[in-house]
Image (cartoon, rainbow, N blue to C red; front, side, top):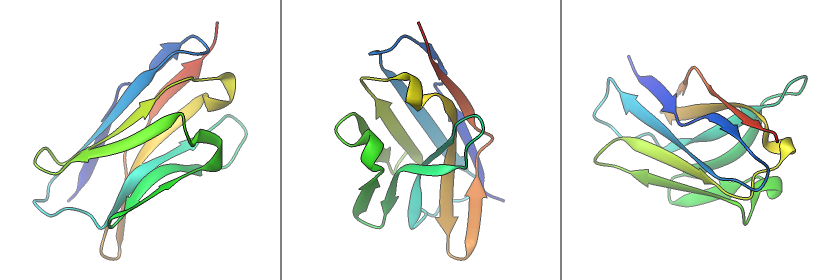
Length: 114
Protein backbone atom coordinates (compact mmCIF):
# COMPACT_ATOMS: atom_id res chain seq x y z
CA UNK A 1 0.00 0.00 0.00
CA UNK A 2 1.41 3.36 -1.06
CA UNK A 3 1.61 6.01 1.62
CA UNK A 4 2.34 9.69 1.13
CA UNK A 5 3.60 11.76 4.05
CA UNK A 6 3.83 15.55 3.81
CA UNK A 7 5.86 17.88 5.97
CA UNK A 8 7.00 21.49 6.04
CA UNK A 9 3.80 23.40 6.62
CA UNK A 10 3.45 26.12 9.23
CA UNK A 11 2.80 29.78 9.91
CA UNK A 12 4.61 32.31 7.74
CA UNK A 13 4.33 36.06 7.25
CA UNK A 14 3.23 37.53 3.92
CA UNK A 15 6.17 37.64 1.56
CA UNK A 16 7.85 34.70 3.27
CA UNK A 17 8.80 31.26 2.04
CA UNK A 18 8.18 27.64 2.92
CA UNK A 19 9.28 24.33 1.44
CA UNK A 20 6.96 21.36 1.56
CA UNK A 21 8.13 17.76 1.20
CA UNK A 22 6.22 14.61 0.34
CA UNK A 23 7.75 11.18 0.74
CA UNK A 24 6.21 8.12 -0.91
CA UNK A 25 6.62 4.73 0.74
CA UNK A 26 5.29 1.23 0.21
CA UNK A 27 6.50 1.01 -3.37
CA UNK A 28 9.73 1.08 -5.34
CA UNK A 29 8.02 2.44 -8.46
CA UNK A 30 7.82 6.09 -9.40
CA UNK A 31 4.32 7.41 -10.00
CA UNK A 32 3.51 8.71 -13.46
CA UNK A 33 1.82 11.76 -11.92
CA UNK A 34 2.80 13.35 -8.63
CA UNK A 35 2.28 16.76 -7.17
CA UNK A 36 0.50 19.12 -4.85
CA UNK A 37 -3.07 20.28 -4.34
CA UNK A 38 -4.45 22.67 -1.77
CA UNK A 39 -7.76 23.39 -0.15
CA UNK A 40 -8.51 26.80 1.33
CA UNK A 41 -11.24 27.21 3.95
CA UNK A 42 -14.66 27.05 2.30
CA UNK A 43 -13.21 26.26 -1.12
CA UNK A 44 -12.71 23.18 -3.27
CA UNK A 45 -9.42 21.40 -3.54
CA UNK A 46 -7.34 22.75 -6.43
CA UNK A 47 -4.19 21.82 -8.27
CA UNK A 48 -1.09 23.77 -7.26
CA UNK A 49 1.69 22.03 -9.18
CA UNK A 50 2.44 18.56 -10.46
CA UNK A 51 4.61 16.38 -12.63
CA UNK A 52 2.71 14.53 -15.36
CA UNK A 53 5.49 12.42 -16.82
CA UNK A 54 8.12 14.92 -17.91
CA UNK A 55 5.59 17.79 -18.03
CA UNK A 56 5.30 20.24 -15.15
CA UNK A 57 1.99 22.00 -14.58
CA UNK A 58 1.38 25.01 -12.32
CA UNK A 59 -1.77 26.81 -11.33
CA UNK A 60 -1.79 30.31 -12.80
CA UNK A 61 -2.01 31.78 -9.30
CA UNK A 62 1.38 30.33 -8.28
CA UNK A 63 3.40 30.67 -11.49
CA UNK A 64 6.65 32.51 -10.86
CA UNK A 65 6.35 32.07 -7.08
CA UNK A 66 6.22 28.30 -6.51
CA UNK A 67 8.55 25.63 -7.84
CA UNK A 68 8.08 21.86 -7.80
CA UNK A 69 11.02 19.49 -7.83
CA UNK A 70 11.63 15.80 -7.14
CA UNK A 71 14.25 13.36 -6.00
CA UNK A 72 13.62 9.93 -7.52
CA UNK A 73 16.15 8.20 -5.27
CA UNK A 74 14.40 9.53 -2.16
CA UNK A 75 10.89 9.04 -3.63
CA UNK A 76 10.26 12.63 -2.64
CA UNK A 77 8.62 15.62 -4.27
CA UNK A 78 9.13 19.15 -3.01
CA UNK A 79 7.22 22.40 -3.31
CA UNK A 80 9.22 25.58 -2.82
CA UNK A 81 6.83 28.42 -2.10
CA UNK A 82 8.09 32.01 -2.23
CA UNK A 83 6.36 35.39 -1.98
CA UNK A 84 3.53 33.83 -0.04
CA UNK A 85 0.33 35.77 0.47
CA UNK A 86 -2.90 35.25 2.40
CA UNK A 87 -4.55 33.57 -0.59
CA UNK A 88 -2.01 30.75 -0.30
CA UNK A 89 -3.40 29.75 3.10
CA UNK A 90 -4.84 26.25 3.17
CA UNK A 91 -4.17 22.57 3.63
CA UNK A 92 -1.66 21.29 1.10
CA UNK A 93 -2.04 17.70 -0.04
CA UNK A 94 0.40 15.48 -1.84
CA UNK A 95 -1.09 13.37 -4.62
CA UNK A 96 0.29 10.49 -6.67
CA UNK A 97 -1.08 8.33 -9.46
CA UNK A 98 0.23 4.81 -9.84
CA UNK A 99 -1.58 3.49 -12.88
CA UNK A 100 -5.31 3.57 -12.02
CA UNK A 101 -4.69 4.05 -8.30
CA UNK A 102 -4.89 7.54 -6.85
CA UNK A 103 -3.26 8.28 -3.49
CA UNK A 104 -3.43 11.27 -1.13
CA UNK A 105 -1.39 12.34 1.83
CA UNK A 106 -2.96 13.52 5.06
CA UNK A 107 -2.21 17.17 4.30
CA UNK A 108 -0.08 19.85 5.88
CA UNK A 109 -1.43 23.23 6.93
CA UNK A 110 0.06 26.42 5.55
CA UNK A 111 -1.04 29.67 7.15
CA UNK A 112 0.09 32.99 5.75
CA UNK A 113 -0.59 35.74 8.24
CA UNK A 114 1.06 38.67 9.93
